[in-house]
Amino acid sequence: MSDRSALYMLKIALSQPGLMRLGKQLGLPVRDVDAGYLVHCMLGELFGDVAPAPFDIRRNSGRWLDILAYSGTGVEELRRRADTFADPERHQAVDWDRFHQKRMPRTWPEGQTLGFNVRVCPVVRAASDTEHYSKGSEVDAFLTRCTEADDHENVPSREEVYREWFHDQIARAGGAEAMALSMHAFQLRKLTRRKQGGDRKTRVFTRPDARLEGVLRIVEADGFGDLLERGIGRHRAFGFGMMLLRPT
Image (cartoon, rainbow, N blue to C red):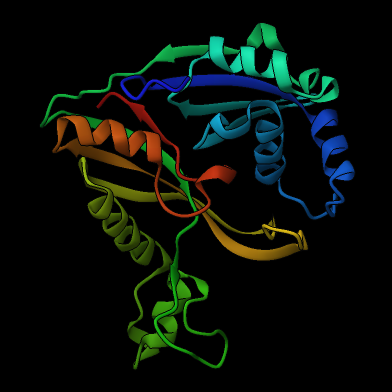
């Protein structure tokens, strides 16, 4: 069972051929499907409702994808779940000899500073209908600023908008505040999702994919552990939002 007092960082090696086979068997558009969605599907097949998230794809070494993830469930219980319930073909898609964990702190010293980097999908919900999207739609935060601006020459840069978006996200989540922040990488990426329920129609759409890095300060001892476990922003179960820490 998941231990509410525990938080683990996991390292999981998943077979890329196994991920592709799963995508084909699920009827996904394999040419367009993003790796994050395939990993999400595989983790769900292996571990059910305790599938680790958020996660970050750290290394693509040919046959294998190396995944880091946060989870309230440790390796022993996850392995037991997969051994008991997972389809044999899915079970073979994991290099179990490289399935590792370390226990993360649950309580952090208030005032401590830490370096971090995080892959995020900086989107917001549209506040009103426009020519290009309807109210409530998920939209690139930068595009909404461009649309709302009266004077397009004074629109902040994409990096500035994403910094503002991140500060808002971390303020809502609590536990820490960003002291320094920059955008290390950016691209527009095609993402794949399937509708829930009876109609599992597949959608492919484009979203912003940014890697942010900086320095944060812990402002709440317990809240920061919750922030790590939850992750930042949208699409956290699909490879976004995992905060990776480093010393300052």
